[in-house]
Image (cartoon, rainbow, N blue to C red; front, top):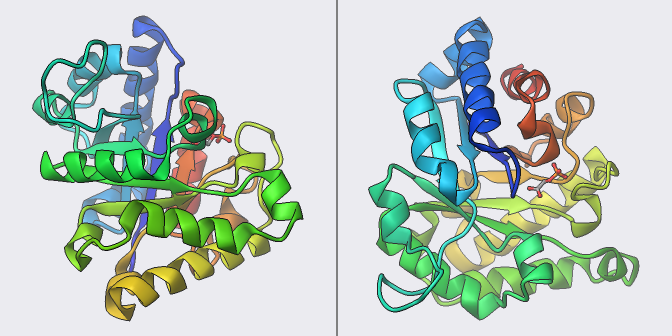
Length: 261
Ligand code: PGA
């Protein structure tokens, strides 16, 4: 049985004080909620926060002793060295991160990240001992042109092609349709389920059914307290990667409740 994994992607938001306040209200809210606490204790639920780089160490202190995991939103594709302005996966591991988000659509589309760069980052990150949340997703134009499956298949090959099945051990996939991110227009439960089932079938094609059946595939794109119940109850939706609603504990906690319902 796959559990659920709900991660908050804070993007380039919060300042130090508001980030700390957010982390504290999240930890407090979890402790006060029996169902979420039980889910986290039993391993049926995982949750994480991914703050901006400058605040990661401070947030690590704020969530210490809780079941909230810590992630970063990106890393560089090389080991530590002369790469001015970049952050190495090993540094993230060093300061307490267990996770890193790679291939987020904002990085693919606003920073021009390519599949081969994402694959290089994934290898370096896993090599440093980080678990990777690999984001996939089609644009609106691609969906309207009925290219969704082709795009997802291409992104899977681009990031994971030729890797051994062990690469899936430290991997979570996030299906994030670009048109749903930050727009308030979420994928319908049916659209999410269809894409997740397709991603799982592609993983099965490359890595075998047993490995694919174990994979956590998160949904991301305007996931909220209001739509989480329906989306997270789809059979191939194993949690969420949450942007906007992760910036307020009052909005994030109900998503965790939906995940353990
Ligand atoms: P959103 O972002 O929840 O604000 O749509 C999701 C994401 O980009 O990870």
